[in-house]
Image 1: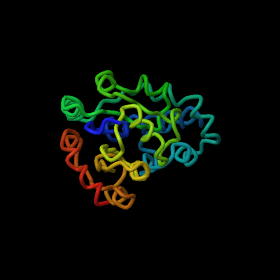
Image 2: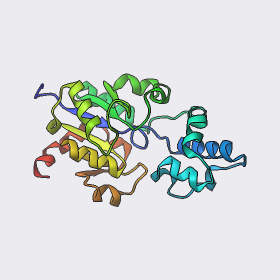
Image 3: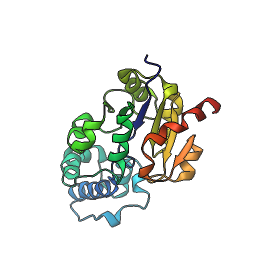
Image 4: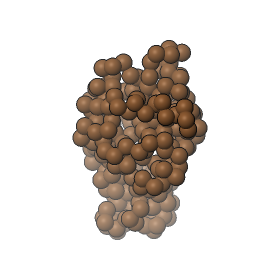
Length: 219
């Protein structure tokens, strides 16, 4: 591996992509189609974004959540485009300008990623690992695969995620785990899951991410 290069890997939803409204709208639309009654985003449980989607749909009286997702999820999701959080693109550009390898590790399906990612973001990512490329998080496999493709060792990489499973995957891969507190999970949950450091806002994404790398030696 190339010892001098570093890598910054990211989760997509809640970290790079401001997709909370899309997720709520999609859950409500799928529940509406499956139950035949109007379900609004406000009808979702308060912690809907922190639960598996099929669990949320079951709480909304969807009899077969897996089948409902197969039938209606992608159509409902594609109706609400998502954007990157403010400051994300400029931060990624600054990282790439200094030679940092950029990638994403997501539980999204590969077909969905192709239309989910805004073009400007897709152009900046050197590698995108989906749930069909490797075992999904909290397994570290996706991070290992991403790093092998960009030829960077784990000790020279950071992973920015917003969930406890992201932190578990990063630590399992030997990568510095950085918790994005603007995402879908609380700072306390990220800390309890092993985050090495918490990032306060999307504008934290940039070359300063790599300043945290020495901390992993003391973890």
